[in-house]
Image 1 (spheres, rainbow, N blue to C red):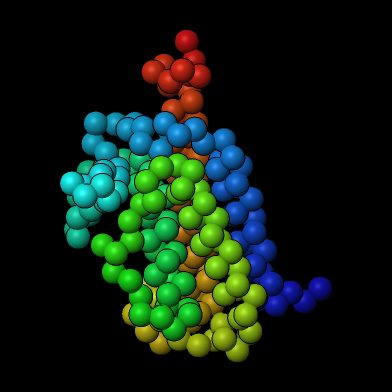
Image 2 (image 1 turned 180 degrees about the vertical axis):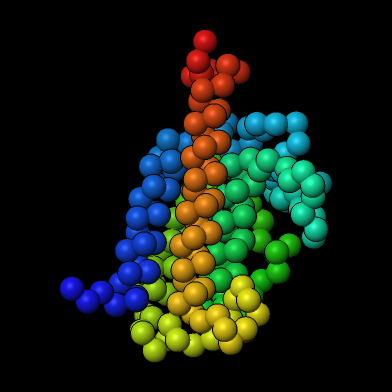
Length: 181
């Protein structure tokens, strides 16, 4: 059987999203801001009530452990910017993409981005996949739209695994109402 690259990328994305739905359906509101370690990156409300992610331009050493809230913002940020690029829109700056404010809103946001991404994937042709990727490599001719779509799938899979692990750790922790005793 000959499977096109577009079909392969779509199936790979679908598999990753199925795993994400498994975790999204089981997340509790308190999971999003649970801090699993003293050195953590999360999302915090500023004086105006906007949720802002912890961030530095240079990755610290040691790297802070992200919360599920921070990871959901992170997914929304890179995915929104990728979709902006693929649709020919001016990509938003990181600071322009805030966290929606709670778990339910974050899940709805991510599911909306999924729908937008599926629209992008459904419109791609094999010829489109050979074009130079506008993101995240800054129009490096060595990286194609196929590489970019594969990067989205890989980055999402990594972030989904991180969210799943944090959800499981919180559920098993002794300070969680549903944890082990």
